[in-house]
Length: 208
Length: 354
Image (cartoon, rainbow over all chains, first blue to last red; front, side, top):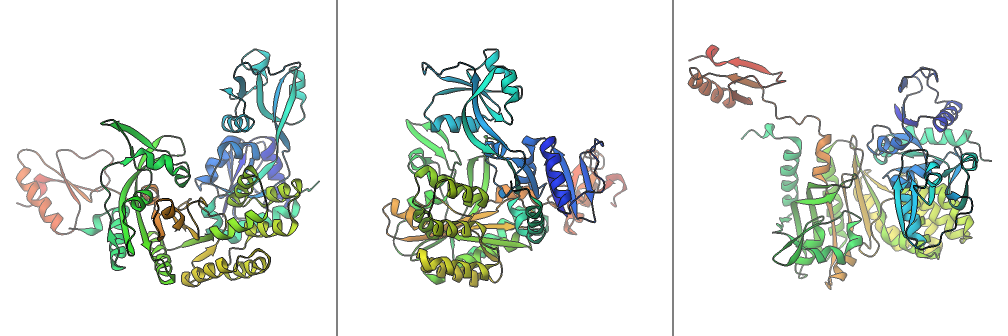
């Protein structure tokens, strides 16, 4: 039995469709049901739907053998897991964005609003910019608009939300996509099952 | 003494100490605290474990986050020393707070020949075997990783990035990076092969031999092959295991036991650490994170088999009955009341025999 942690939301749905295509569908699963755990004995899988930021915790602790998580979250949490596959879905970019017309005058620490605190610290330290990081849990785009921060450090998919809030990207930091991660111990003791899962997913992936 | 009443981690510690003594290793006891400067000078050896410090009599002292550094600092470099230890270390946990953790380990310092290395691997495997039936030892070689990484001719941030790919087996990110940075195709393929190396050791050695033809890793591959032979099917080659290359020089180990989601022990060949202390000697060792794995031992319980409940009037009768039951191999608690959530046998002393 492979225990799989999927992130609730669009990314998880896309990952599940990929799994289904690879022959790892879950007969019990239905999008309309509010249940969070589903099992399919025949396919040998157990699915957990968890918050995107919690996927790494489930996998690292071995509760889930594998999980699907965005590279942004993976980088932020520096979890001790294997990263087996770039699933090529959920593509976006980690960017620094600010209100149109903003120019950093370097007169003091740059106020950065983000939910990716460690990644933001790492990035700004790599470019030698002193910062004051403001940890937010959502609606990051609001922070510069309301004067809470100078810039935001966040993921940008289409740029529509930024545009609607009068913001623009001033620096693209890295590309992001969903990754298949595995618990290091599970990968040793369930090697054949996880290898098969990995290979079959690879076989149905879209490489464009 | 009823050894059956020991919890698994307590029993394990006793059995492991007996095992290490059976190989002629002597126990090394560390005393007091350590100078904080020891850890600032060897920060990368600690791999972010964090150090708890305090000032005593004007001196900055620390609670040990690691035992190996103290042993290397204190043990004289004359002759070969075979030691084991059972100590507590103080480290940062994943959530950032410090924890006190029990750690057992083995260190061999002096002349480390093939036989010594063989003994260390058999001690590691015997240690893992006492924790669980199904276990595996992952081995890699610092020399191979350093040589192939150097051939890629990277900046320090590039080196950090590709080593991150190796550690997480993220071959897709490495291939992307190699393409974006126009890395040498042949050496990139060699590095990608390290990431993707099969866990089957014979095939892994064959692949390393192929790579050795143009990367000069023959000697290191011979060493790995030797470890695989000693392991009798329990040793895998896995290059996602490595330690700081300014301290480790040869084989690096990580041990896993089924049912425990992370490595239970780690270690390696660390001659370079001794060099940093000005000691001309070789060293190899490993540490078992007993404090971190004991929570996975499910059968651990302090609950008695039986509770004898007594009053002032029945105390003598209860005492005699409890002693008798203990003599018959039972865990017996004498109490004035039935403990909350107790599911075992409850005996009221007035019902006990005179």
